[in-house]
Length: 436
Image 1: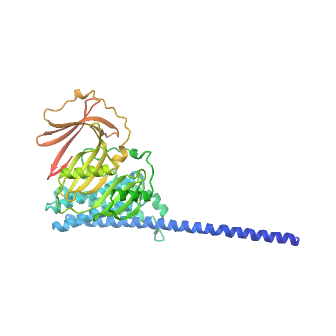
Image 2 (image 1 turned 90 degrees about the horizontal axis):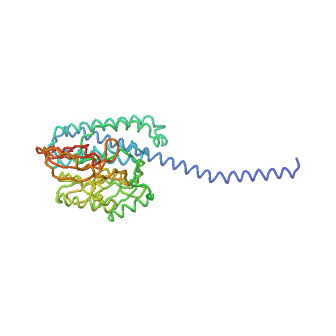
Image 3 (image 1 turned 180 degrees about the horizontal axis):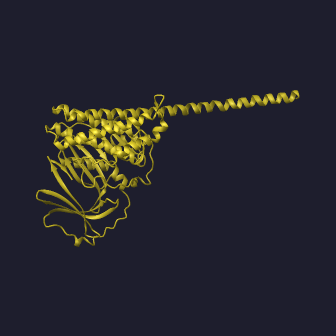
């Protein structure tokens, strides 16, 4: 090999080494950043998972004491803690990367427990004793919360590697989803503010958000600032990966702490939870309904009419449905909670509306109205046209007939295409609390 060839080989070798080093530096930075990012993801998943378990454990412990203590003050404090822990659990579940019906199932379950605790809290605060049925419901929820905590704790045992939870495992969440499936067929205690068709349809397509522009996390924060100009301590707590993808935003407004789920598409409030106590009810039911309707309009939900109102003296629960040309669309339902002391909206649940509101393929023919037959036992107090969801996941144009018989209030629904009565509901007054 000649000296010239050796020199060329050496030069080429040096050049290759230089190129390799040059490439290695940014690659090393990239890998380092990727590892740091993965570590951060692991930390978020791990933190949220264990905080879910802590919240469930706390809620279970508090529920176990409710039926045992006799003091109204202590009972009220226990129920308030259950309410708060359930909401913390929902927030942390939203950060675990779960999606689809499993997330919606567990959210509904925990909201059910929290809202029921809130209702009982108001009742004990008014000096009332819990009924036998209410005590049984508390016991049932205690058992279900305990089982859920146990299921999720067992799932965690399969996820830990070197005392750390694998983000890959948690982002898949197959094991957690399997555990949660046990809660999809629960016969929940009926909440006192659930009105007609409060569950809506089972179709899990967010029709209202179709074609809407996607917003950023910063856009979601700006949306909260627009709705609550005086809001402070605004921060993003993660993202919900359910069918309705949303940013989870926490903030304070006028001393009340809130959590809001702001949809990625369109930037709408899918859910809002506020934590405030009511000690001196002053607002009338009508004033609370007006406040709720105005608030819904301000956040983009217009043409809404109240279809069910329950006033427990501390909080007024209102179900609104979209109304067009005098027709009430029950599938497009939004639930609102309003403080009867301040008139402030403490809660919004708009998932039914988001899923169902859109262009419809419904026959609005009243041809069979003349063939409707109403029992002579019923004293009719009101009628209206409506669209209702059915058990076979369709919508039917109906005539709603409200009436009374022997002290009970009834809601009857007649299919206007056939004149056939397809649904009947009765309002039961249990210790002053209306169920349907």
